[in-house]
Image 1 (cartoon, rainbow, N blue to C red):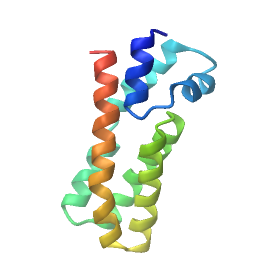
Image 2: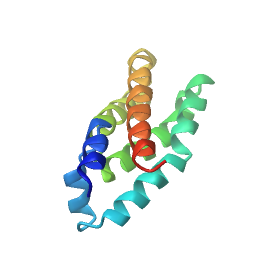
Image 3: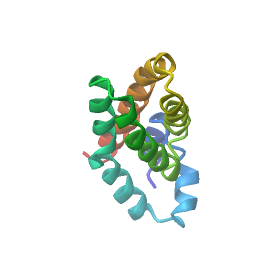
Length: 119
């Protein structure tokens, strides 16, 4: 993998070495899965549910997003979405409200890094 791509993805919060290990060293799969992440509807569904005040409706997309982030070695986003899922399930709107901007910021950071590598 080109060092430029590796660095950009790391700057985006993606633990590239861990992801490559999970994908048995396949850079083609890494690219494929990261591009697919950009088209997954769960982040948008989470944002729509949150903006509509539907905390219960935000749980499933937040949980699915958390799983994807874990599988794709997006460690910061994984940790934040995990905390968000717990807050949503507990009905803690205040905690969830503090976490949503952080989740959105980390999602954008990862998405921008992926798009920068494969425009």
